[in-house]
Image (cartoon, rainbow over all chains, first blue to last red; front, top):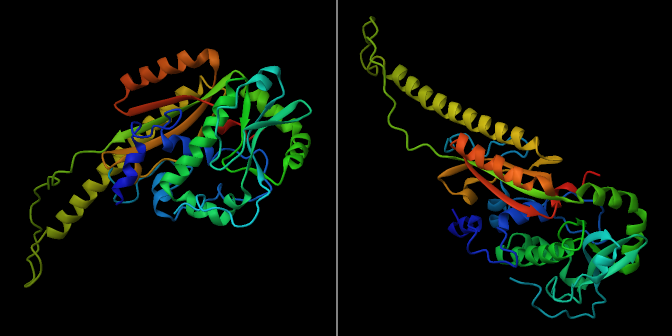
Length: 75
Length: 278
């Protein structure tokens, strides 16, 4: 596992302008409801969650059912 | 791997990046946006008015906002953080002057005229969203369940060996059954914990929804992000009236005492999650 990714959840090192944890911020600025669509299309809303970092950041088993553990998971 | 740092080779007439839409009020017009840098490589953060609405916008190099540039950027931790925080900083600054409808990261138009046209065409929806979020803030609530200590070998009930005589070369009698029982025990315990965790998540959500004007479930985060010691069971977000914020904080405090789950509260946020459904 990429240890580097774990640090994202820690509020301390994320000293952005407003001190908001990055993970919470991305949950909002990426997944925010689209009121209008822009002219230049950047596929963010349906980011293919295959790449290492963002996948780790936003991954879940299922969006609707809060069951992030796969079979054989930690529970 | 920052594409943005390489100088554009072709002249770039720029695209108009829109951070948020708000009412065209005196407060917004006098809001100090000059200190904001906005997107890397962008121009001055400014307002584009149309009718009773105004967009908080900025000219950015179009070459830096193509899908090709952004796909790798979305998976580059430093880059995505840089852009997300730049976006958030401007949205938050605008929100200090009144209600805003934040737009998703990287919403771009070809020019200011296009922005004005969208403001005019979508005016009813923007006003609806502004009305909805005025005097409200978004609060995020995440619930984690700590992971059980490593499971001890399950106690195997002593069972009398089956009466039938073992065949030669066959495994010890009852070994298969014991194995199955053990597996079943592990499985049952895991199921039980999982159901308990879901139950806690549901009751936290149900209670907080009572205080909220609206709520949404965001996706939960995997172990790579939460660590191995806990499982993320609820990632919910609530639109809460400004005068009920204290009530929400107290409710979260009470839930923390009543359950053994870890509950994290974040906010107040500009209501990012509550502007899309109007």
